[in-house]
Amino acid sequence: MISSNDITGVILAGGRGSRMGGADKGLQNFRGVPLAMYTMLRLSPQVGAVMVNANRNLAAYESFGVPVWPDGLSDYAGPLAGFLTGLEQCETEYMVTVPCDTPLFPHDLVARLAQALERDGAEIAMAAAPEEDGQLRPQPVFSLLRRDLMESLVAYTHGGGRKIDAWTAQHKTVLVPFDQPGDDASAFFNANTLAELHRLEQS
Image 1 (cartoon, helix red, strand yellow):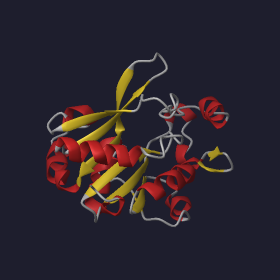
Image 2 (image 1 turned 30 degrees about the vertical axis):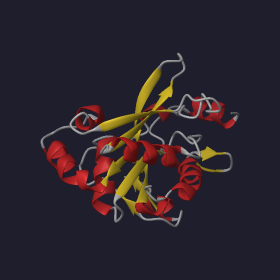
Image 3 (image 1 turned 60 degrees about the vertical axis):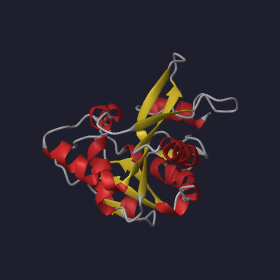
Image 4 (image 1 turned 120 degrees about the vertical axis):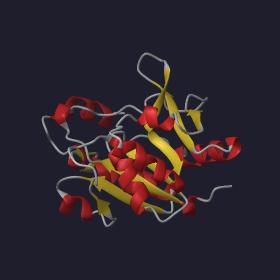
């Protein structure tokens, strides 16, 4: 079994927040604490170490007490830039990514991804969850991956690649469904606007 101590969690908080009027999404209030901190408190028990990927207000994120790393790629290159930053700084064999705007993700997220990765001998385990229309869809920002994929990701991003699914398609990827009995159907709903964030707070 992959031990949680062999997994580093990376909270992706490096976006522009354009649908929140440019607000730094991870610092918006959620149930009394910043959204990214709520995410960190949910993720920390599931992994051996945590870091935050952020591109502004770094001091605010550093106040969470975990390492904070900005993108190495310029121009807000998207989630893959956060993946790459995480892999460059990761000191464990595995890394898991979670976005800062989906605070109600499962408490057993990492364990189930790790179990599937090991069972299938895969390089990447990616969550798949029902969306509001009930369809099960991949959630690529919730991925567990091997640290030794860094070289591949460097080559892909330096060649101009930015799409997560195009990169993960190059590797053995297992989809892990989170639609089992007892799973929360809204666990993977994300907040792109303040109104959506307030709705999530009521969940």
